[in-house]
Amino acid sequence: MNHQRANTLKAAFQVCNVEPLEGGDIKRYYVDLSAVRKT
Image (tube, rainbow, N blue to C red; front, side, top):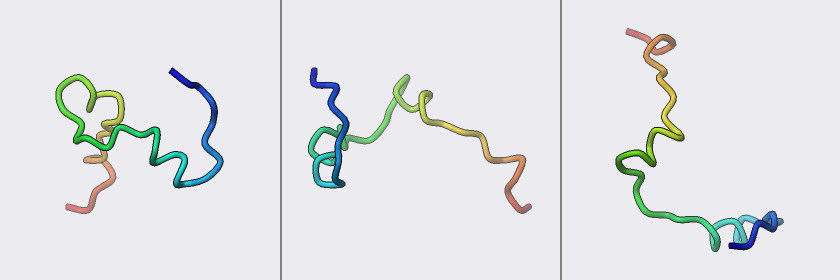
């Protein structure tokens, strides 16, 4: 795997996995915002 940083949005998109997050993958990015949402 290449760990070079992308310098453009196009380069970043090309190395991204754009599939929906499911299962354990979503836990890496999930942030509970329920405390700051308006009710």
